[in-house]
Figure 1 (tube, rainbow, N blue to C red):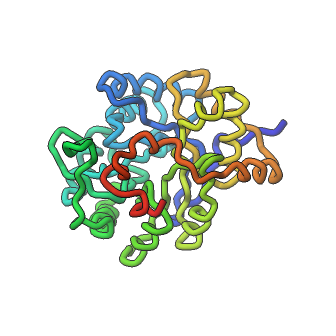
Figure 2: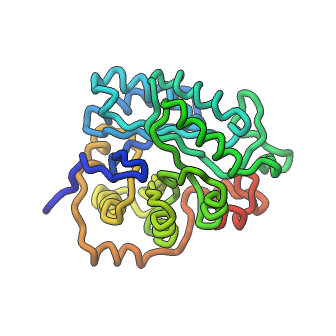
Length: 300
């Protein structure tokens, strides 16, 4: 059996190379889980990962930076992605600079707009709620305006590429009406029950935006066997998708790097499982809205 080259990269529309296999940086919602992430991030780097995906909302930027320093691996050999939180509108530069400080690095390889919606900013609370449990959002703040502020970060030289997350064909089309810089990636939920071939094709046609998988819960949905997980991850690789498997277990981290090369026929068989069904966000839908927006506004 032939295996995927773990050093494989994909070319972004900036000309930069992004490692196709990355380590997902979400660890949980408690401060202890977020602090302890530095330990398993370090084992991941030692196992061979050279791409870590973190975010302000994940609370693991400091852990990411700590793991990088302790690894002894040159910073230039590690691709770091972080994200502007949904309440970062109107203070993009400030939030970005804080991410740099928390990561304790000089530059970020990829900076994403985490969500297209603008959540009301409450200091110290990234998850504000209305009395009915829904999320308060600002309808007078557009993702087009937020993107314009993110584009300005490129002028600082402290970020190499910018992109989006949780965008659909609908929202990407709207963004491209005003964007001066085409997003380098779109990080979205992708798995056999949510294949999103049309979205991936649209992104590539619209300026070669790369799709990044963000669907770790699928492993539990389909059955937590090594073979199933490896096949699903290999399916992503075969489709030209950047994958971000997350695990705090050192052995599973290694398993997620040993992926078989699957055939085009196998890719088609897995594609046929598509239901356009979310496994990640469904539990968070309240009164017909997800984080303050109805699903149709996302374009889902």
